[in-house]
Length: 402
Image: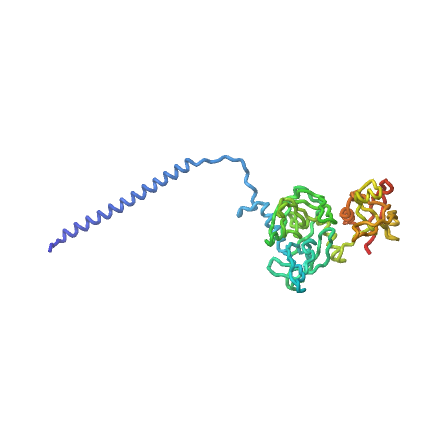
């Protein structure tokens, strides 16, 4: 065994301390060298960065604490104020199977707007057409059975009613003003396209005063055209201005695919306000009418009767004692059988042919109804009639339907 003196142990300890200190200093120097290299690399990267010179101004932001633009703030505000007043309407149409058992034959969905805290909803007629059951779903997930207060095919507007709980305060959407709209004005649509509840889209007014034929017997005039995306399920939902007021009811899209193509149409709120008021009071629209029996003119009838025109509405007969009779409209006197053998009917030729009402050309029955859509009993209209080869104008006072 080898023995070590105290001097030997002290010397060994000193040598060990020197080695450890040397290693520590080497580690520090190596670390600083890497930091210097990294700093130099970053400096080179920064030096090689190209700074683009632009003159694009930043969009105005609402405040310093967020990045929303004024336009975005406006959109958000309208949505938060109105979305809870937009409802989802689902319908079921019942039929019978071979065993005469009731079955659901079809179903549909659309949108609507709560316009009164008592549970009144405005929507389109075609959303609830032929429905056996109507379900109205609110933003909180609750659903209620809906009933039809009244509907008006000529304007495609219907009013529904559901009964909310006594302690539930409903959000509503107020009617705005569609008479002062401008092309290019911003609009917002909220609805339930493809069942996606309370979807919001934005756009502009693309056109005003559009006459749109919705069916063979209905032309809706003065419709609002918009490029805001409107898809199946949006029907009946509100078209809003930038203040969150309803300026139209989304109704129709023009599309080859059935989806939005940037051409949608809404019934103006000026029409909706008048129609809704009548539906709430009377359950129907109280329009002024002329008590006439009309037949669609055609080239076949014109050739037979010797008329020089082949369009317009032939006055087959005029109700006795009616205001139309006292105003000078004449019915036909020559009775003929018209139609197929199975469905032939007797019409009377030789009377007046209505070709215009208040400067609106009347070619079809849809034109005739459309021209009288906004008229009330007691209104006086200028009726252009073709009589004995000449056109003349009569002033006719409209009366209530009996």
